Image (cartoon, rainbow, N blue to C red; front, side):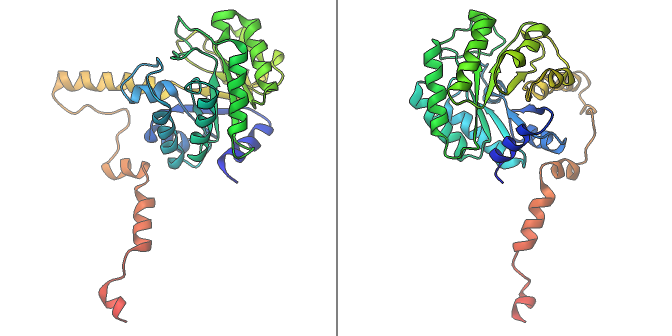
Length: 293
């Protein structure tokens, strides 16, 4: 079973899939090791790791390559941000092909005008409804495996209101999308209404400090969401802890105590050292005396 079919199977089961956000292979490994059922490749985090804010500055190939590295690092499904599909319908088609061949299980394409911006920033613009739906149709047609999941994200709530966002979500599902993602509901009441009004599986974005209030995952599951992504949980934490460690180093001129102390071997074990060393031993050449016998 490939990861796309594994994710599709989990969607049919009871409960909600929680996918914390990874922006590189270290954070992806940590999510896998923590026992979560899926990892979400955050577009904002991918942009940040490349040195940019989330303003549409990262290309499709940069995003796909990062997603592919993450997928090769973990043994759980990867759900990946694919921004607007990076252009027209033909770009959305190619985007699906590039993500799918790198082992991604699902991606989401949104209806913002290119260049997009973070869904929790002001100043967003959206494309006409039919243009969005044409990209969704192209994306669903592009997949080679029927198990690969297309998630339709709409940012219409901030621009055209909740009714238009729900209309777009349902139209995208009718156009072939597997999951609807209504970005940035602005209250718990709005967030709770989405699974009732959308005629298919729904994804909720837990973005602390954004437009949506800080909701409880168990509540989201109870009201009917099938997937929850938590994109910034590690990126925000890393920025905060790095600020703290660097300030202490600058002040004390000593290596600060970390939140958790690791020996060097312990740290590399978290990154797969034992597996790679076992592989080397398995395939290493026998000593000369053994070869002579």
